[in-house]
Length: 294
Image (cartoon, rainbow, N blue to C red):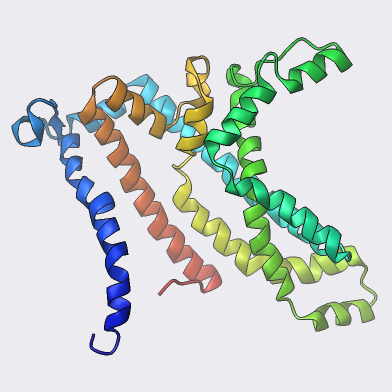
């Protein structure tokens, strides 16, 4: 403590921020076990035990929100792992540094845009009178498609838009991994007569595998996080059947419908499951790829 006290002082603002905005509000988790009434407060509301949690599995719309969350989140995880790997390999094969850097910048740029901005762009492009429908109608004579209002198309639209926004960040990680591969492996493979495709298959991919395992296992912790910001800015009552996720359901149940206790119970249920999955994912990452934070 005496030797490192300046470092502890630097940690004080972060600790204060976490304490006030992360741990302080956790007192509100008591509402999950109450028939919470705002005018009575936490101390005056009746305790009902686990009734709110039982209602999660009794309400059809709550169960549907859980199913939607799993489908959307798993789809995002699978696509979000495969596409960055492929793009990183393809980009690493480009020898022109200028072209390589330009492509890298273009695909990474959307990561810095907020979902409010991206949602506005998507509504303009995918609306009934948007640019995409205008092209479909004028070039192919297809009737306008309501991408954000059709339950069958909403999930693919969400997954593809999330991929467009975020795959550049994942690609950077894999590019760094490829850059760290010993060039002598490629030289030995080339001497043995391996083509570029064979070098990718037998040198690049095996060398990337530890990082792929780490990213894949750590993604398990996000299996119940389908992206509130994205869904909230894009969904509407027409697509609740396929687009309503746990976080948006909690928002509507608690803040809009006044069911604060039930909404808190749903959120707590998700948090506990996510915590368990995070612990499991870190254990798997340590066992499979020797990855550890501490």
